[in-house]
Length: 566
Image 1 (tube, rainbow, N blue to C red):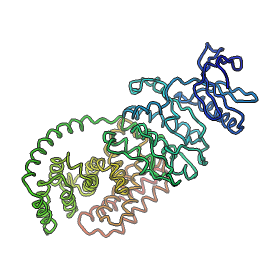
Image 2 (image 1 turned 180 degrees about the vertical axis):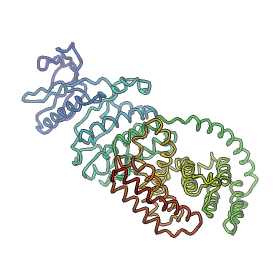
Image 3 (image 1 turned 45 degrees about the vertical axis):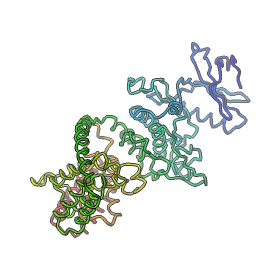
Image 4 (image 1 turned 135 degrees about the horizontal axis):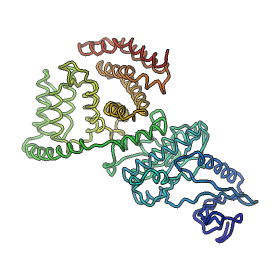
């Protein structure tokens, strides 16, 4: 160990100790040959030859990354010095705070999480492109240079020097395994010592974002009995997390999915997802929410007084009448009366939703009636434990059955999908994820596709659409797979799903060709074609949907072939 005032290699004056580990000590030093510039000197004992060699290789890697890094995320390795007892690595001194220290006082703001998250994606993407997996992302390995945590106010040059990655001991060559990981942030494949890839870094980043967002460390992947915890147990957004942005929560939970295939495929995709929600404005929605809140509060107060004069038996009587009714109008009238008596429970709403599906058409008038009922009781209805499941079913009602604009024969696919997105966003809740993980996963897929439809035109105009098609391709495939394995789905659900997938192939086959092979696109086409042909449509509406799909077979094949010049 070096004492204060010691001059290393006739150049670096030791000014004090700033950190220490089992076999290493980090000093703060003054560079006598560079106008007393402040340096960090890491001393690694050679008592463990393996540790010293590992530190040397780490310093070589950091130097290589630094020389190629245009964003200044890596510290500069200035010199390596050796004697018989130790290896000394001289590098830039990082005058800042560990991200872990910042989090000791609580979660970061939404804007800071997004900006730091984007920077983390940028630096890990840089490492991935270099053919390496970082494999140990966590707040301890991030240094924040600025004491001002409001980084959204910094200009670009300052922001890009605001975050430094400081530990590279776990970096590995792509596709090889490693036993080194931090249990709180580790992916299942790390615990099981399987081969790692970019999606492992995605999981680690998601765990770090969870910590930044909630202020709480994730639960360790290792159970007390030595077994492996799943992500449902480790990443819980409890009642204290209600104010967390729903889209950010969805992104985090996708990152930490136990199945690597369900995560983002790369840091660039994750960066785009974070960047998208940071750019999105909700001015119109906010204004509408404020006006509706006033309306809801008044109507809710009135309906509450009215409900107090009614009895529970009246509600049950209406529910019984609805369940025994043989005509559509009788069912709707009875369920509606039940809702008006007690709109805080979900039973009658579920009855309405199922009744609206009976004629495989959900009209604009029916939509207006349902929205009015749910709006009048929105505050207390959301407190019902079944609300997220109800939101999921209403989302499916709009997605598959909504007939907006059908009177003038317009194609209402976009309207149906975008109308359902709000309901699926309501279903993306941690309690629903734990109660029904399959439907939660499907709600995420519906929501992702709906968001694509809502934003794609604007993004194309702005030229910011290049990264969204990969997620869209993944969501389309997952949706088709989901309805195929769920044998309870009706023919209209199956056909509308296949129609949407075929329309995606028709509209975006060139965009898909930039990252998907010809064989993969043809495989999806042939699979949907076979499934569509096997369905014996039993109603005029489903026959029309099937006809809409089949008449496009030739044009879709032609589009796919032309995208690959075949």
